[in-house]
Image (cartoon, rainbow, N blue to C red; front, side, top):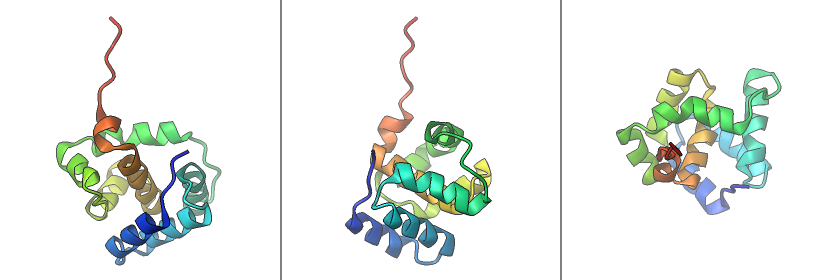
Length: 122
């Protein structure tokens, strides 16, 4: 399970102060004691009023093309998620709060690692 520390939540809170949806996402992450694996389905349910019908991996795959663009990846690697959450939400059709949590997840996983193309066994 990937967790966000209270210190990291505080840093993201100051970075995202102008976005009520992003702040709501941070509140949900706090409610889940920093566990992103629990917070993301909770956000999907709150933002869409539907059960999260996709697994976390499905959501990440849906975002991969956008998140792995060089400029976006550089923002993520430096911990800057504010400039990417709205374009991510728009380009993938994912609600803004969920996009915030997914961006934080990729930051925690390491954008470079997340974006590596797995080598084929052929």
